[in-house]
Image (cartoon, rainbow, N blue to C red; front, side, top):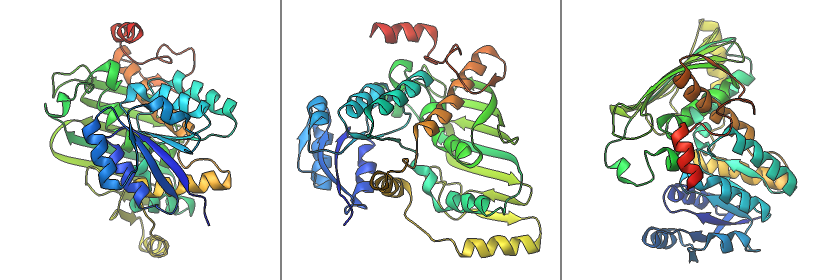
Amino acid sequence: MSKKFRVGIIGAGIASRHLTGFAWNKDLFEVAVLCSLDEERGQALCEEFGIPEYTQDAETMIARADLDIIDICTPPSSHFELCRKAIEAGKHVICEKPLFGSIAEVDEMARVVARAEGPQLMPIFQYRYGSGLQKLKMLIDLGLTGTPFLTTIETHWWRGPDYYAVPWRGKWVTELGGGLLGHAIHAHDMLNYVHGACAEIFSYGATLVNPIQVEDAAALSVKMKNGSLATLSMTLGSRKEISRLRFCFSDLVAESILEPYTMGRDPWSFVAGTEEHQQRVDEALAAYVVKEDGYTRQFELFHHALTSGGEPPVTLEDARNSLELVTAAYHSQRTGKPTPLPILSDHPLYHSWLPEEERRLAAGA
């Protein structure tokens, strides 16, 4: 029988979606305890998902010998310290996006994990596992797409005053960024997942929709390391919410559905340049084996990695790529110039992309 890992969850917001993913993998995971400072929401989740124990003491929970995995579903500003404490306590870690508040923190966490010699950290990028995107990955692996030319990605959602009534949202110190970091990051991870790392970014960003500190609109032009180009747009002021990914290759165009929150799922369209090649593509797609998607699939793959000794399905390097994109975009917005990647320790935003005044506030806090 497969080893069943015992999980402790911190947080009671996005945690509900994690709990659904664990519930679909009940033979692989057992959620033993939930920790949240919001007792009403925490106790409600415990009742809904049959979690036997509720606590408000994260540190004691992390130190427990009967837990294998700590799943962090808290606001972004708390992620780094919770991850560090859990890894140093010998626990595997799952952590929601955005992972951390700087490239420096990602690099430091890589050192923390290496020193721990055993615990694994998996960032969350569950959108990768929709069947549509997985079919595109399969076609690339089979050599059926040809040379990549251009990718366009639209994250056009709506977030109004009610959304920002939550105290930590819309503020640099607690949310760490705006729509680029907290909303479009999933779609932009798909760009890196398909094409690899970015080489250079030029970006405009603005706060147009809500009276908040962080950006809620952005337009990016990107050069990829594989030689292709990409254009990325993000707004939280779209009354009709859509997400769209369109990948143009020499032999194929792949386009997602428009559903804003499950754009990785089928039905995607795959249009080849000739009838003969379309037939090859269609035959490959007909042989595709449908699997679970979202959190369910990412957790299933994490279990396989832990039991086989392999890498997590989403790695710290993946999270670094996504946060490099964000860092470069913020730097370009402030300098008015293209920003080359990678972001290394001598870059002015390596330790934080927060504006200077907000960095001082964060340091004081």
